Amino acid sequence: ENMTKTLEVQSNITGTFDSLIKPDRKMIREDVLIKVSSGMFSSMKRKERVMFLFSDLLLWTTTAYQFRGKMSLAAAHAEVSKKIDLGLEISSSKELCLLVFESKAQMESWIADFKAGKEYAKKVRKRLMEVRKRTIDSKRGKAHTLVMEAFKTLEKDRSSAGSNENLENLSTHASETGGEISHSV
Image 1 (cartoon, one colour):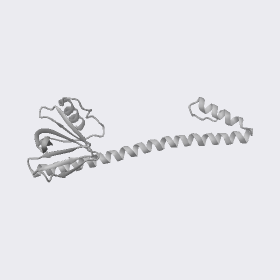
Image 2 (cartoon, rainbow, N blue to C red):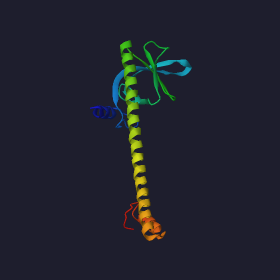
Image 3 (tube, rainbow, N blue to C red):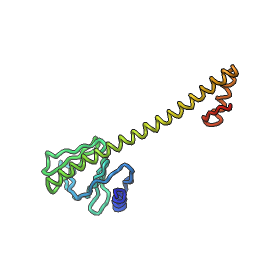
Image 4 (tube, rainbow, N blue to C red):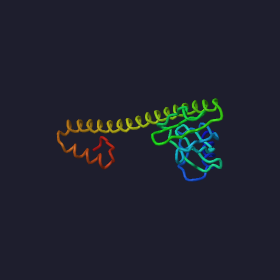
């Protein structure tokens, strides 16, 4: 259901932007809000924007779904604005997005969804790191097993033949078989 909604959103938006489809991305909400941006001479421009909140991304378009901008939420935080009533500042190290809501309840709902989305993204990142670590450990384990098999074979061959020729044969065999070690060298 989430992937279907994300695909629908992506197909409705015009303009140049990166694909919204990511296996770890969750669409949280879509709302038409007022986005405030600073103009020249400290003027504040208020424009109606369609805001899409994903677990890792805030994206906005015109009401005709023309892409206007995005913000990664990985290191972003949300804070009630001290400048504008019913305003919420979502900021990252690179950007600031000031949104104005129709009601306090709507703003509080957005704050809760923002936090829940970030928590979801954090859990997904943690799971991905665990999978990567297991994959790396698995590869290390396989390499360790190959090395141990090589030493066992070497010890067995040394004890029976008593020479270093077997080591050379083992290395040659391992390189010829792509690291596969068998006991018939």
